[in-house]
Amino acid sequence: INAGSMKELVLIRDNPANKINFYHLAVFLVSLPFYRFYSHLALLSFGIHTLIHFNKLALKPIFTRRTLLLQSIFFVTAISTIYATSKASAFNEWGLDVTILLIPVLFCINPLDLKTYYPQLLTIFSLGCAATIVYLYVNAIITIRFYDMPLSMVFSPAFTNHNFSQPIDIHATFFSLQIAVALVFTISALIKARRLTNRIFYSLIGLILLAGIVQLSSKSVFAALFLTINIALPLFLFQGVRRVRFIAIATSSTIIIAGLLFSSRTFRDRYITELKEDFSSLKTNQRVEPRILR
Image (cartoon, rainbow, N blue to C red):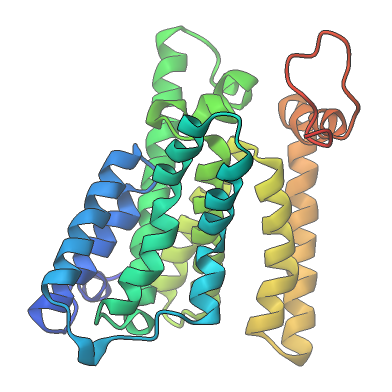
């Protein structure tokens, strides 16, 4: 991506208050893969700035069906407290989920036009996820070299799933969800890109994000991503022959990637053997209940 495009990515033309809002959200998105203290701090600062510059003329409707739908997960958490065996743990969940309640409200009272800036914000988010994945791979390679192990160990269970995301202390599935959002956006941006440099840029970011998804090996996110890329993207981005062509290319690419994954014992065990265990009944001396039982 050229210098001009990079400048447009981080420098926006708006009033000073909205520029600060934009940078607050950029920092918030980049900090999401890391310890939640940083993202909560960025969100708190964004909330305070929003209230300081509150303008009722820029107020968007708060109590809409879309907003309530986004907040519904928090309401489920709160209602479930009624039958919780540990009220302390239940209220701790309130604290963890309160951002689900607050974020839609903050966006409704904040004057920043998200529709205008979401391409820049999601590009920054995708770059942040890609940089984090590169850091985790570098950390894994340094560890492998330190213990004088073969480089192929990077694809062993010791460096996949939770063991891959452990250095930044985030659940592998949570990080996979973030990467999936970034990957879907990157693919849509690649499709719309006209400049060769932009296509190369988004292709490189997409490959890094895909590598992160594979390394984290989250079965649920991988399945959701398969459906999104092969069904949702062509449904919303294309029509007619272009839609059929995209589905054919996406499905073929998915089959090739799946074939490469299943050629590795680590990923074959993760995606096939463990999936069977998830749908099996509880066995004697099994420490964790199968997912189907839960």
